[in-house]
Image (cartoon, rainbow over all chains, first blue to last red; front, side):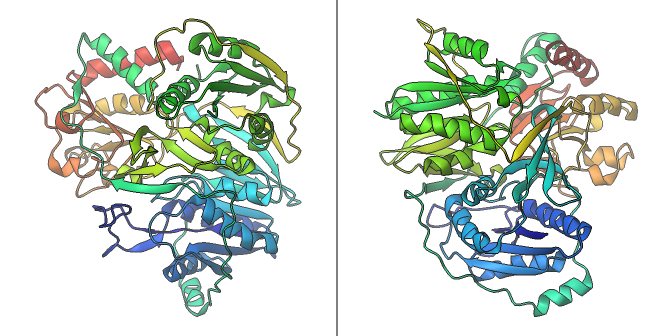
Length: 261
Length: 326
């Protein structure tokens, strides 16, 4: 099988973040760039599937500036066979539509059997590139995969989607297909020493730049701001039972509690 | 004036609550950029749901009936919706940001030659244009996005736009349409029921955390029972609880433990020291349960319950059981 895994390089935003001088992105100075955590699960899944089908290969693709090579290389350190970078030099916010378009241009020529993506990117949290890419390539797709099994004859993939209320939905997709995986589908491995050494000498080719030709101009990010802290909390009133009812109503409205009712 | 199309979500033939929130959102959009509303409901058995939605919202509903739509696949949804939506030439297509909605919405946008913005949680005018607010960087920042001028597909975060309470003057008209879309490349094989499942702290969407205020180790059973009500949940603890040996240190949240940012954090019997708060203040929604109404945890919680948790948690579980039959 020929497998493509999409990996995004993001600024590590787990510590304190500040808004940059443009007001349109975070201040990246001093931040470390690394692989989007959600994509680590996609890389791991690609390696597991590759190893189950001898002769398979995993290509990791990253769209971004020169430094995105480090993220493609990180996938090789984890065990991917090769890495590719699609040049995308725009700083700050980039429309998922543009990213998907660039990856699709690469994937069309390669005829992958399976494309894997993470659930979303930690930075823009749009969760779009996977499903966009599938549609651009005209292949079936499923997101929120918490389990995935390729059929013995490598003609289909069975996906368990994690849906509301902790329930799961089973879907068979005929290959080629795209699957966006959920954290928890596996436990991403640490790079082995031999793969780290292999990645060191591995060239990350840069794809020829292609002009994005979507039907219309994409959406624009006009402002990035920090959320206001809500001052005092809302104290629930009434008898203990009434408070329980109120809390239940709040959680239901926010779709945090959705039982199998 | 181009229309605003709302895609209703149905759950076993009845409208999902997020459908009504999508209508509220569409009305808010129409106040900023006027256009007629139309709801599209798609499924194997849509008639009753369509009537209910039309009655509750007063908006006209096109019900697309397709015997193959008993089970969901993105391929089938995109095919059926794209062919029905395209002739309407809408300005916006509004989709609930549910496990289904975010699965098919981006691909639908590609089919319509439209833009796509997901998980929208607020609306405002930004320099004379409609601005869509959505979370980024794990909720640490908010983006204001101006959609492109052509058609844009939007998914709306559940809980952000409460459904309207007032009944409409008259129900909307319902049109039942036969839909023949097929999806030859994917097959829905049904659902499995929810199971009690705990994820690790970093992966959990809901974290129920115990503090010294739970009183004794045996009360952890209550904390676990509360966590079991939520999918993708995990149990965590404060430093004090881990120091006491009631929970392993791997489950400690705070400066010396883990930093977490789940969708929901329920702090039970936690006073709310700065050390603990540093590890969880980025949770999207924080609920605190503590006997002491002056506990600092209530300063950062979004909702506070000043009650004895050994009394309150069983009451809450009981209330859930009535509604959700858990």
